[in-house]
Image (tube, rainbow, N blue to C red; front, side, top):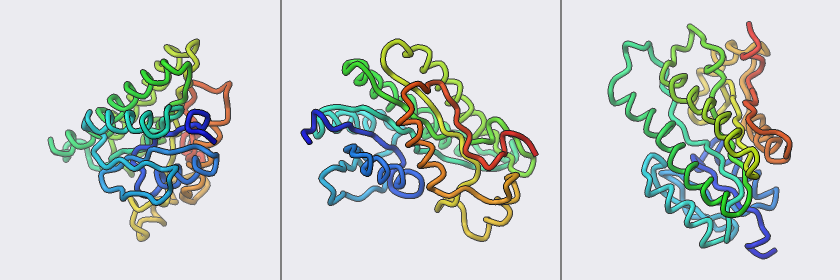
Length: 237
């Protein structure tokens, strides 16, 4: 398959957890992948280009999108997976907490999404998926997380706005809104407490979120969707 025919996905936060699972899933779909993370190591897979850098830095986004075009000739899908989650009472957040969460969750989204959509428009189409959090729609007193709601809630609103803005231009924009998922972010000793937050009384698996992203990739009539993958959290308790 020539690079010009092969579809290309760009995944942020790609070094571990959900991001690494998404990279693997897109390779199985036959896509080439640009994998971005501050700590990512070079890949032996010729279909994977790794870009080391902080997504909050515009230069990282520029290198990632340019790398996709230079190495593979195009960019078809962006998965905004990079994110920071800090759960604290609102008055305990520090200015450093605020700056860090805003930088990755908001600035990172803005930089790479703007550059990716610009490229997709020149190609005549594309797809953007952003990973958010079910706490946006389901605030829980057991998990005080205003910074997650402030930033990821904004991304869910932006998802719908971008979907409508580009609905007639061949670009779909969706989001996946997970509950608590078994990733390196959560120590195993917290699993029991986190499982109890979900009506189904278990945490999500990496595959639950990855499968949702793949579903959206293969759903050409779906745009502006916030797909909850949260064990029923957004439905109620």
